[in-house]
Length: 454
Image (cartoon, rainbow, N blue to C red; front, side, top):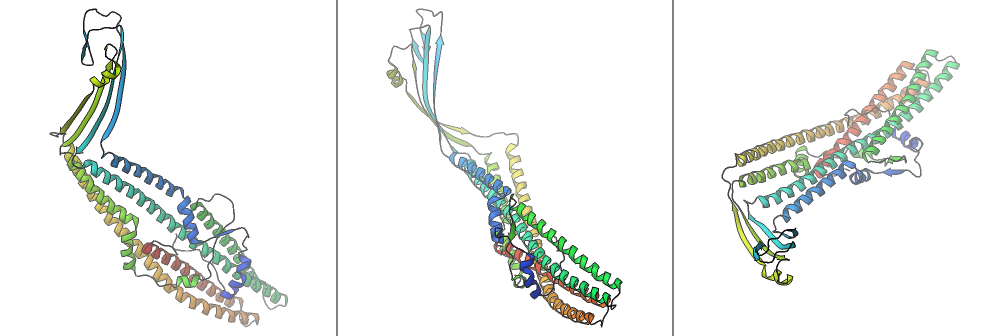
C-alpha cells in the first residue's frame, strides 16, 4: 500500500453522519463483509494457499513412505515355464530344478514358488534421518503455506483500510460539494443585485465543478479497491460487494501503540518465515549426518522360502511342493572403500548449506526488524499527526464558518473566503490521511505481535 493515501475533503462530523445514508445507499441484498470474514474466506478459497496445501499433503506422503521403509520388505513370486523339446534323446537323464530326471517329454513345464524378505538393519542411521528430513519437509510446506497466508492477510488489511478511507473520502467530497454549491447559489444572488462581479462568481463555479469531479474520482477509487479485494478473495460473480464501515475510526486510530521491541520479540517466536529459516538450519544438520553416513557400512538381513515343481517328475504335485521346499537366510554387509570422493563432497556441501541457512536466518531477522520498525514509526508519527490535525481541523472549520458569515454580509471578498476554505481542506486532508495510516500501521503491528488482525 502506498504510504500516501488519496486525499479527501471533510466537513464537520454532524454533517457527515447526517449524509451517510444518502451517500452510501446499501442494497437490501448486498452482503457486508467484516475484515475477519474477508480473511476467513480468502484462507479457504485463495488458489495459492490451496496449492500450498496440496504441496503439504504431498510432503506428508513422502514422510509416510520413509517411515514404512524402516520395516522389512516382503514379496511373493512364482514363475511357470513351458518347454518344448521336439527331438528328445531317449535313455538320457536330464536335470531340472536341481533334480535328475530320467523321463524326458517333448513338452514339459517347471514351476517355482517363493517368498523373499529383506531388511536393512543399519546403514549409519540414514534411513531414520530420512524420516526426520521428510517430516521437516512437511513442516516446511506448512510454513510456506503460513507465509503465503500472512502475506494475503496483510494485503486484505491494506485494501480494507483503503476502502474505509475511500468511503469517508466520498462523504467528505459530498459535503464539500454541498458547501461549494451553496456558495455558488449565493454568489448568483449577489451578481443579480450587483454585489458581486461575474469573475468572482466564476471562481465559485469552478470550485463547485472541482468538488463534483472529486466525488466522481473518489467513487471510482472506491470501486477499484473493492475490485482488488474481490480478486484477492477469488470472488468472480457480479454480486454487490461491500464491507462493514465502523463508526469508531477515531478510537481505532487512538489506540496505544505497542512497544517496538515487544512486537519484534513476539514476531521472532511466531512468524513463519523465521521458523522456516530455523528449520532450514536443523535440516542441514541432518543432511550433514546423512552425508557422513555414506562412509559407514550397511548391514542387512534376508530370508527366503522356495519350492518348485516339474511335469517330468512322477511324484504328485503336492508332494513335489513339500519335498522341494527350502528355507534360507543370510546377512549382508557392505563396506564403502573408495567412492571417488562422493561422500566427502556430500559432507562439504551439506556444511555449506548450513552456513547459507544461518545467513538466511540473519537476513530474515534483519528484514523483520526493519519492517516492524517502519510500521512502528509510521504508527507513532501518524498518530501524533492525527491528534494535531483534529485540533487544526476544528479550528479551521470554526474560522471558515465565521468567514462564510462575513462573506454573506459582504464584509470580506471572494479571495479571503477561498483562502479560508483552502485552510479547511488542507486540515481535513491531513486528518483523514493520518488517521487511516495510523489505523493500518497499528493493525499490522498487532498482526506481527499476535498474528491477529482486528
